[in-house]
Amino acid sequence: MTSWEENVLKVVPYVPGEQPKEKDIIKLNTNENPYPPSPKVEKVIKDFDVEVLRKYPDPEALDLVRALAKAYQMPEDQIFVGVGSDDVLAMSFLTFFHGEKPILFPDITYSFYDVWANEFEIPFETKPLNENFEIVKEDYFGENGGIVIPNPNAPTGLACSVSQLEEIVKANPSSVVIIDEAYGDFNGESMLPLVEKYENLLVVMTFSKSRSLAGSRIGFAFGSKKLISYLKDVKYSFNSYTMDSLTIQIGKASLEDEEYFTNCVEKIVETREWTKEKLLELGFSFPASKTNFIFATHKSAKAEDIFEYLKSKKIFVRYFKKPRIDNYLRISIGTKEEMEALIKELKAYL
Image (cartoon, rainbow, N blue to C red; front, side):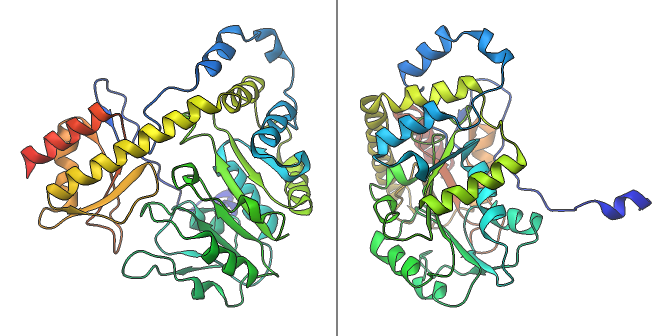
């Protein structure tokens, strides 16, 4: 090792889902929305004045914040926006988790949490899900430096009830509790109404899944005025201009088309339930997904073998070679036609 390498921060990076470059594939491995964004988004892109791009964007992204405030009936000073929910969550880790006690999150969950904890040198403990992949609320009642719980969880797809999560928030008045609702729009329940009740609660959401804007990177969070103020202080000390001018307008347009958003979510949920039925007929089992994916295992066929077979047929699903979940596949919900093709190939393989 050369002398300068001794001063390098060394971390094991997050590994995102494969992004194949070839055409004519069915991509069910990164939980993207199979439908295009709202037509209002398309109009913004077509009409966008590129002259705007020579100037710095609005650091507060006020057009987007105001649209969020209107859509979610929240005060503007209780909203934080970032470049995808990953940016919002990373800023939250950096802002709120500076104590000596470990932060807590599930052992099977979004694998970026431990990456951020290691990168920012935050002590952490993972709490094991039970045998049904459910969060055990009592595990989060002890002393800690903060809590992060995705609801619904990924990759399991399971959701906790709002009442269970409220018990965790209520039991931890000295810690910031982050509820990551990246898949919340498919669940139907949100912790958002409790933000006014608990000063230490931060609810994080994204445009990537339900609003078909993974490629634009828009994330946001709701919290008490004090929480959001601290977040903004760190963000503006890190990088004031994180969201570009076009993205701000794209996000605003998406929020202004509630009917399109609702219809897309309903179609995905309907296709998810159809896919569940077909997978059960083929001998698969899975937790009761409240997301836009299914976390499935087969009674006799190995997940890794199914994964490789589907890949050879240009159908990409997600396989995690990790303890407790190495015989499961995470299957994103595509269009009805894509899911029919998946079921056809699974039948052929089995």
